[in-house]
Length: 112
View (cartoon, one colour):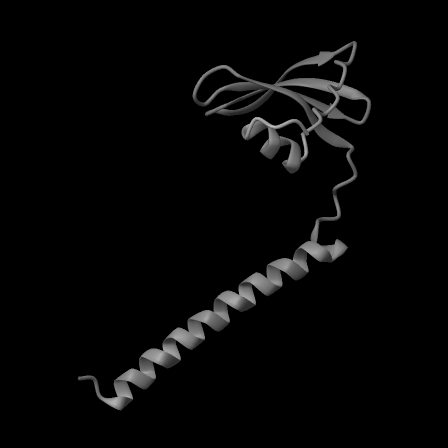
């Protein structure tokens, strides 16, 4: 049988662990809600238009910087600008994701 002092110290450690995990989750929730924590540089002036994997560590990426699009090679040795595109690639429209209810109905074979 454990002594009361040992049981109390284990209970205190568990309580402290629960408080720390709760504090981390609460701060994460607050950080998502406040606009200042998202980053000041998110102005859509720089975005990835398209990407293609060439190997396990190599890929080519088309990056839009304002109105200019650059073809960039990314590999183990770093990044390199391969070409500046004269005619920009069209930006693909985001695919519409079905609602959860529609996915559930399809899974069980019912019409939505």
